[in-house]
Image 1: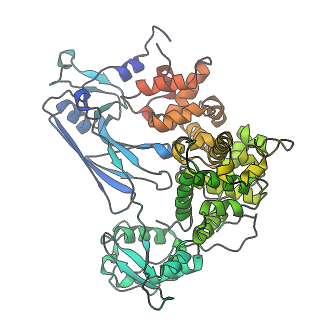
Image 2: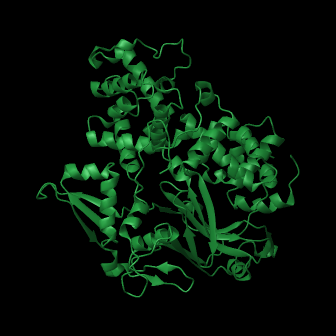
Image 3: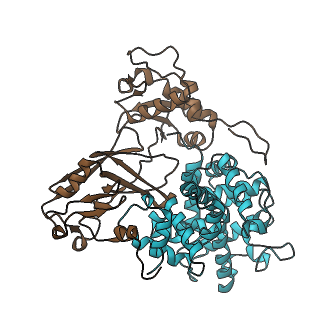
Length: 289
Length: 297
């Protein structure tokens, strides 16, 4: 190995003009002095989707590569706790859509610009200008914005609220709230709340059934069919996600988009998607539920 | 989106309980409460057989609904399809670890669940309950039948904590910490759970090995398992310092580097590759090139 550099390795390691905002201020680099690179991330309606918008200007060498298709805006997502890594590419608005079963804990998002194929960069306006066009291999990060830390919301669509003064003591009530997004609130005396929350599947199924029976009457849950055959519920992220799950299970939704509640809406069936009541099994045996 | 019925409250209970059983650094002048909690845990494990109710009761610390919740969560955890002997757990082989991975994954283990050290405690208790692992003695570190279950007289677990000598308190503390590590991981080093908990390590080794095999035709899952993923330092470093190096392509590059440089250590190759790969997306580079990058000039 010593003494020989494979040309590909040389290109991988060679110094190139970059915009690098990931280091501490003193070490950050911006080889196009006039350039500006800003990134903004916002959650989409689906709780596991974010939209990351890139705004790059006055870095002509970089912008040309993007226009030619030789480079792309991208977001590298790392989840150290689940050892997950993926790079999402796109236009100036990159959609990051994660599989909730692959990640755990907080996520790091590194937005940037990465080359998608071997290409030549025009270094005009940078200190590399005298060298002329620079060969760049695929996979080189030419711009990196400051990383974003994202903590997926531990959003619970069913919330239990103890009411010590609930009268009579055995009473339960289920209502809904729209702040910050649609969720259902089960109230009862504290000792009864715990009995439901911590393992009484049948009671939990009942709470969900009651909650979901309200869906047709909640304005924010109006379903909008899409041209590609899918549906959206723009009024509520929770309802939008729920609609997706129910459709994947082959269940009818509470609303077919006409504004009229569907005859086929079965809140108990929908609740059983959320609450899988286990069968009775002998200790030591394992059954799928 | 699906509500985690008992798992989340059970995990929260476990985490709270762990904080009452182990502190950051052993303090010989601490009060008796922590020692009493450790005695209760070890007492529950000694000869518990397949009955984990005393262990769960110790974890719930008198809270009846939390205890019910924990028992339900344990019952809902996946079960191995074959029994394991102590040597199979502590001296792993590819075939055994594949069985562990595939059994648990077939019953719903996901990467997300497998990243939660608290969930591994539920899984471990379920195996003890189902008889697929050798019970509390295994957690206590007892290797062979002829050895006593504890490194100190069993009567020590029943006396008042104030009646224990400082050395015995320390012995008990060490044992309790080992139990927590082996069972799923200890809260104050939660990021190390993969190397501390044998079952978690088995699952993750196979999971990552198979993903790497898919990334490079030149590398088999079994080779990944034995060349790189046997190294606990690799897990520690990729989790804490070099998370990018867990990507399948990077792991494949490391495997090839190990093949080409059998005298080099995995941590050294990993550190070199991580340092040199900082400016590019390792998933777009041929693993053979990454292997060359992992070699120092």
